[in-house]
Image 1 (cartoon, helix red, strand yellow):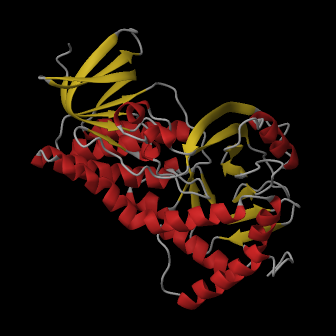
Image 2 (cartoon, one colour):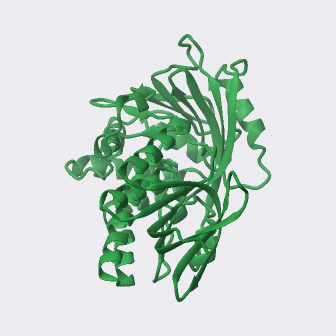
Image 3 (cartoon, rainbow, N blue to C red):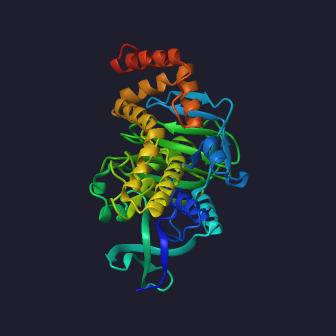
Length: 397
């Protein structure tokens, strides 16, 4: 058994795990941050200004600033939504995640490169076993607490949290390509395109997200048998990006619903994708992963101080207290509009509405539902019902 002993071992070094590790290390806890080398999650890379401000993200990590969002319907109609008084920042996960891991290390966390295998317990404590990357040998860390930040279909969650294996998820696939050097009708380096088309994704959406000198082109689906690579090739063709050089290809599951329970009532808690905190409908996960990491770090620190396992439940309570309503609204939107091309057509039509545009992006920028305009919410509710029932069938509202 190794003599490496920690207060907390964080398994997974994505945005959530790295954030939790940095927060706990800054509180003078002895933290190990374990991550597999070279793993890059498929991700459009969009981050809101609130995240950039809250987590002090430097300008060099923002590879593009998006000023317009284009929603494309199954019949190729589109609506361009200006992002007034702000922007959507874009990060490249290959560099952004490593930036966060370095920051955790600078805060005092010990970085370990390896693959988690299992957890055991005895009178000496909780032991995390992992396969060391360079030596290939099995090593062990002894700890008071374990944070599982190892993504959707988390091995920590499967082993330690009841019901975690039943979480619903989308399989996402994207290709990072060299971006065109000129702006065209189908590609603009300051515009994100979101494609709601059953030919690309029968139950989710496709995307073209600029990353400065590169771009992310991809899609997601819950349906078995969909050819993700062909769908992405078709998407590239429709955007005039077929001849662009492919830099890398990545695929991974993305959870669609927060787990009902994040902890094992003792010494393990989940965060980020492992806890299921990806926004329904949009699939946005980076901000929520980092916010979850903060909440989990706070609950873990309290658990270490008080030695009361019940304190771990504070993480989910804090996170869902702030973001649960947004998740419920977005979940209802996905259930309502993603079931067929007819409904997706109506959804894009609804996006022409100025009230929808304004409230959507105000909520995106600030990460909370906007309550200051009740009449706008009422108008949107009426229009939403009209579109779903087919009372409104034209392409503009």
